[in-house]
Structure formats: C-alpha cells, structure tokens
Length: 388
Image 1 (cartoon, one colour):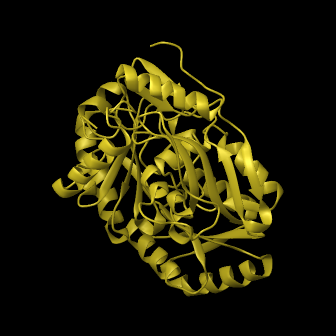
Image 2: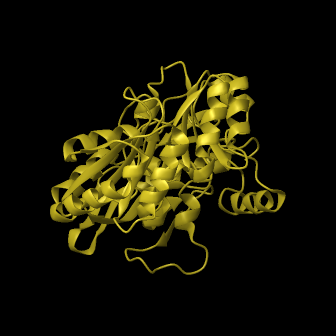
C-alpha cells in the first residue's frame, strides 16, 4: 500500500476524496490508525488519514461547547477540558483495547465509542452538536451547529457517528461537554456470583443516589465484585455512597473505594483491562438486556472465553481465542442482542460477520443512505459488512 495521504487542511481531504471518486479508487479512511484491527479489513490501494488535521478550533467553557478537527488526539481534548474542570460526557475508551497509541477525536466519534458513563450520560453520538465532513464525491458538508437544539431534517451528526468512515470523512466535530464532578467514590461489593451482582446493580441504579457506573467483575482476585460509582460534590458523594451502602447490605460485604482508586478502577473497566487479553487474543463487546448478562457470561465460560459486565449488566466485554469457533460462541451467546468484533487478525475479520446482519428493510435503507453519501462506494468499502 502506498504512503498514507494525510492532508493538514479540510480542502486537502476534499481534494483527495474527489480524486479517488474520479478514479473510482477505494480509500481506507482512518485517524491515527489505532483501530485498524476493528471490524472488517478494508481493501484499498490508498489510506486517507486525518491525523494531520488537528487542533481545537473552538472552546467556550461557559457554554459547555468544544470543537476540534478530527485528527486531534483524544488526550489533547481531554486535557483542555480538564484544565477548565470539564469532561467528555460519554467517557470514551482510549486506544488501549487495540494496543495503545494516540486515539483521535474523529476516530472515537466515527466508532461511536462510549464508556461506563453511558448508563447515565448517554452515548458518544448523543453529545455531537455539529460536524463537518467530506462525502464520497469530495464535497464538504456540515450538519448541526454549536447549540443543542439545532436539528432539522436528517440528523447527519448521529448518522455519521458510528458509521466507521463509510459515509464520509469527518473533518471537524463540535461536542457538548459537562463540568467534571468534584469527586467520586465506588461501592465495591463482594457478591455470590454475576447474577447476584447484576441484581445489586439494578437495585443501585433504581435508587435515587445517582449511580454513574455499574459493573460486575466475575473473576476479580477477591472473588466476584459488583461496582457502583457515584460522582458529585464531595459532601453529596459522602452522603450518597453511605446511603447506597446501607441499601445494598443484603447483597454482600462491601467497602468504599476513594477517588483515586475509583478513577483507576473505571479507567480499567472503560478500556477492557480486567480481561488481561494477550495480543494474540480477540476482543468483543456485546450489548444485551442487563438481566441477560449473567447468562451470557456463563455461556462464554463454557466455550472457553471470559468476560465482565458494564452498563448495569447490559455491556459484556469478552476475550478469547481468535478463532471462528470462538466468534460463533460469542454471537450465539449474545443473541438476541448485538455484538461487535473489536479486535482480531485480518483472516478472522474477513471471514465472519463483525456486527449482526440488519433486517431486510433496515439493510435496504442503509444501502440508500450509502448510495446518497458515497455513490461509488469508495470510503472504507466492506468495513462494516461485505459489499458496503
């Protein structure tokens, strides 16, 4: 493959796509390339990278709005927000599940990656106020704006968030942000098993104490653990975590992790670290009904895989052999929920569905949207499904 194209300006991105459109030449679209092992491999002669298209273009802390070019490192955006006591709401994972590196804002939005705070703050796509992007013809388009209520017609912001570069090349993203909580604490409960852990999470999430993270680690060194995080002003956190502990006493012995331990715990949960996956192993995430989480874990264990639960039991992180048999076990266990192959060798990713097939009416709509935005199918062809 030729050296990647890495324009430093939006006009250069548009010119590169226009040239590929004229030549009917597929492009592999990426940011810093940290997620190349995710979903299906793209067959393209050239790579178009947004890594040089970087920098924060607007930050208005009082208005809780930030805008940055797509190639801006996620860490740079988070550092700018932290300096003003603010944060990204969806708590997106770093590049750690894919081996590390400097993940970009555009890559996180294009993959619609969300972390533990998804249960209380919503998904990454829910906080995208506006985008600029280049479609498959090489045209620069924009959607949304810099305020929350700005949508008229088709919401391209939500459409491109999660499209993995198959509908357009993101060049700038505007996000809503929120103040960072003054402190946080985590209630760590030793539970009998994953099912008891999910019941504890359900009780905590149904309480009035504002739980912002809810996970079960079935294979922790000290035995199965249910973790519930509370974030707020210090006085509120102290009161709420104490009341939550009293409420959940029937589920098992517990302790309270302080702010420093809480930050480390949830960064690990966010990035898949409890799996301790080796570089030769595959990674999956499955979205299921929270009450199905323990069943999925049990089925995975029988198949020689391992996992843990986030999002109150509704998100299953999975690691195991990078084989077709392991993948089949994951898809069977996750049914009727959804799954994503997060990391695997090219041979496996090319041979199996990396996300569930769409029902025929939805698949037809997807093809129409693809044809409208990328009529020659040159942007990340086959990334999500064969032929798309």
